[in-house]
Length: 121
Image 1 (cartoon, rainbow, N blue to C red):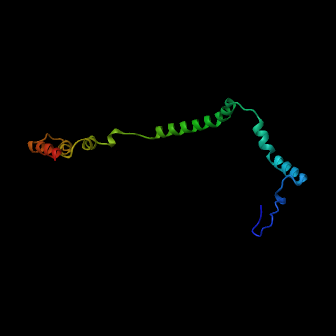
Image 2: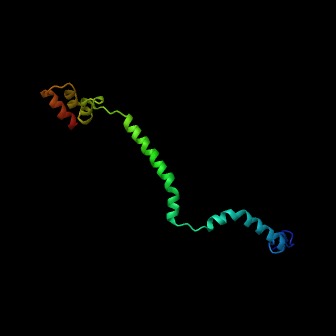
């Protein structure tokens, strides 16, 4: 390979095999730094062992979630009288019908006509 002036480019500093001692020292440093990870990966673990390691934290998490859920259910008081029946009826029925239902009266003829005409328009 040549440079712009026509001379050859010296790639000598990049030659890994030129200085064997420097290469061996670099390899030894890399292997020394990677030794803990290599030892950890060399251990043979079955999937059952891996799952067993997670069972204690998972069981603790499930226990905490169940306890919080039970405390919440115990503290929440749901009362049916908080939502009046007329509110539910008004939501489910058309406006003219919910009017006479909320007033707790029988519909008149004009109420029925308005209910039928209101749905057809």
